[in-house]
Amino acid sequence: MNSVNPGCLYGVGVGPGDPELLTLKAVRVLKASPIVFTPQAAGSKDSLALTVARSYIDESKQRLIYAEFVMGGTSDDVWSEAAERIAGYLLDGEDVAFLTQGDPLLYGSFMYVMVKMQASHPSIPIEVVPGVTSITASASRAKIPLVSHSERLAVLPAMYGIDDLRDVLERNDTVVLMKVNRKAMAAVSQLEADGELSRCVFVRRATTPRERVEFSLREVAPEETDYFSMLILSGKKGH
Image (cartoon, rainbow, N blue to C red; front, top):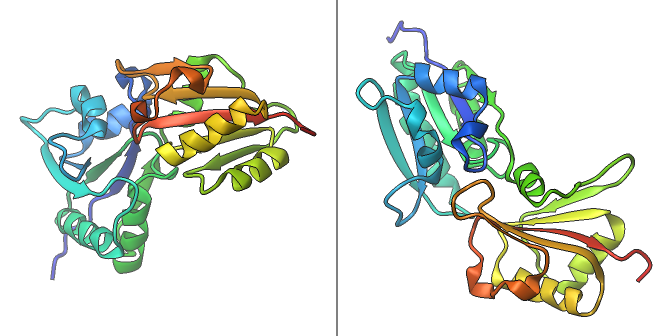
């Protein structure tokens, strides 16, 4: 029977890409954690979250554990396996920092592992360290307000059809489309061409060296989008 007190699992949001946007708490937790668990996209040689946080990690004293996930969707079994893998370190008394791009609980991979850990090992302490989101980072780089006063904001991870998007734009003052794909680009381009948008801002990889901000999709080719692309939209009320 293991009598060691379990370590703490930290879900650490590393922000949108600029290492200076990590919070003071995130830096403190990263430096103090003996194990740093970093998810990476399947087929990738590195982790974007790790790239952001690397300068705060001492690899001579800390262990980096890589885990490969499919960007945009992973099976339930994969999250269970990841949780059990991490639990092995925690049950030995070691703290684990789980890196997450942006914020851990906003479309972050950490949330799935957290839920599995809570179910299978309820005695293990868990702490979430919030991070700057790509939504607020994108708005800041474009220098545009998202919402104010009684305005409504909708955040969508994907868009399934132009009629759906028209409905959301009608019911909300600002709509953010995350993880933009070609289908979304085509639908939004059509709305823009038809004059149905009062605002259309494309932001890719905000705060990173590869950042791009455009105020019309006429300047953006569909192949220029990637998983870290975002659209900030407003419709024309009563159009």
